[in-house]
Image (tube, rainbow, N blue to C red; front, side, top):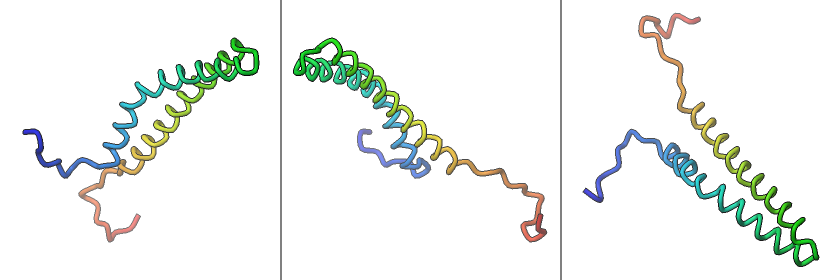
Amino acid sequence: MLFRPKPKDVDPRERAVWGDLLSMGMVFPIAIVLGFFLGRWIGGYFGHAQVGQWIGLIWGIATGFWELFKVNAKLNRLDKTLEKPPEDPKKDPDDGP
């Protein structure tokens, strides 16, 4: 069925992180290619197209890895919030430590 109800046990934050992870496949190549050509264009404007393309390429690669770092940090934060220590069923909560 195309429009089935969403299961209630899935956290929307987890879905958002999956969307970020799946988008990384597009972010890397787009950032690298865009950095390369923008650097080449700006470098050509100042008379040094090759230097500009290398600077733009490095900038694009750094941007791709920065996005990867941000997604990884978001995934770690989500992992810490979802992680709960197992409770001991034999221990009475009123007994203290």
